[in-house]
Image: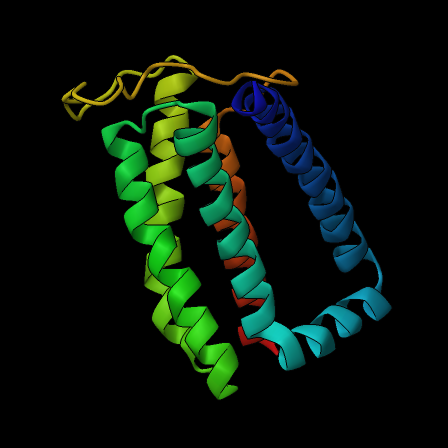
Length: 177
């Protein structure tokens, strides 16, 4: 009974958090491009807190993906596993960087985030009806299986894509400073 309640709460919570984070992100981008004060504030904040921001985003993706596979019960497909391979190390690396107060980790994480962005964009393309050029083994789950579709666009790959976009945007603003 307890697992059923947790299962029924997990997915709507993750989807709503994704929607809210997407809205906040778009509002931030608009304000960042319109107001010099927001741009300066973002740069100053990221200059001091880049590893914390990267850790929070990657840890959120980590927890969300585990919630979908271990609580809700959605088996990850092959592309989801590759996405995890690109996201999960970022949690550990940013945690270590936080501990050491080392913001140079940004350079190490950039290739993981770029590859993760491209992979999740491709996975989203497949779910939006595009033709896959890679075979999916379907041992766990089909890469084209749609487990979640909320608000007309939020799928599991879009959730991961959002996190990679956040990571890349924070890194871009930080490096631009």
